[in-house]
Image (cartoon, rainbow, N blue to C red; front, top):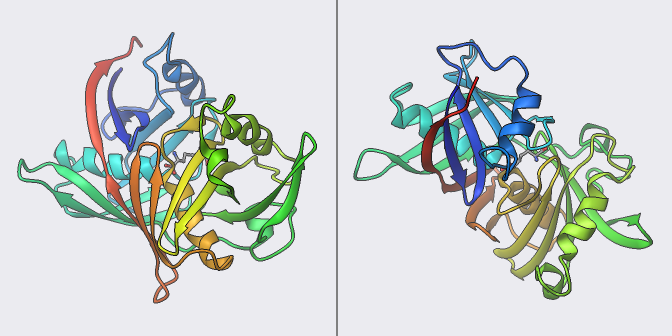
Length: 285
Ligand SMILES: N[C@H](CCC[C@H](N)C(=O)O)C(=O)O
């Protein structure tokens, strides 16, 4: 099976072009095996590029643990780059079918004729607790207490098609060495908190200014990642509903920066960032 390795700010996935060949029979199992960073290729998960009857192309995304997610922000930017650069769809405005519906994507093509940066209309945030889903109260739940292993966190919950828990922290919490990694220790516990019946992506955020944050992520189904596109969108929304940051936001993630805008005009969240193709390979069938 031919694959392409791509990443968005170091959030790396294995991409399989299924537009002219049948998809893998067991994508959940394939994602677990191919994502393993020692016994497989190594990635945060698997993304299938599929035909669509509603859009130019369809994206299916599987986390490293094999669970299928509704949406992936870094993934959709790379998928759009792939279909343009590889000549599948030579348009600079694309429509991509995802688990949360059809999304509009705008491509920025560089001097060599390849896509370098992508802007995605990620759609409106989902704020009703039962749609996130969460048992926390609020629309959305704002800085609501969630206790895991005896420690209570103030959680703002938002969905971008997939569920997100946003927690504002002091700078030292984000350091990955002092001692051990608090993001991994507490993110892994919060991921499976009973308040989130479908688990949750967990983001720890330090506010620099009303237009700038630093964040680190523990992803549902993949653990620590260098960036999370839907998570950065959720952080943009959480900042507005908690009054901590503005509708235009730059998020500094370990893998780099994303620019977010939660538009007042259409209630949609726009995300802009890079997409990189690293190498092609063949996985034994
Ligand atoms: N782990 C996520 C899917 C990947 C999202 C992330 N990589 C992004 O860039 O949005 C979930 O289970 O909802």
